[in-house]
Image (cartoon, rainbow, N blue to C red):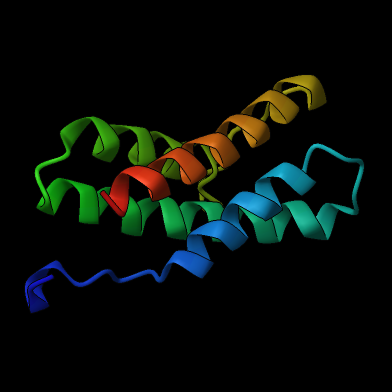
Length: 103
């Protein structure tokens, strides 16, 4: 891997973000969900930029959508059942993207 292709987020950070997304399906304190917004948005943004730089436009869009949905500055407000679906979906996107990223 060339120096310009080096990842800004190590694999363990992406896995941690996915684990947090899957954990969010449970009923947890509000502070956890606030933390999740920052983590998911940050990791999604980093991965979107990396994917774009590598020419993987579909992945860039997928990670970008995760970043926008979870953004903590202008938050979206959904029902709990919708959030559960989005949380699990973001976890899946992170894990599948991790697999794609390492290929």
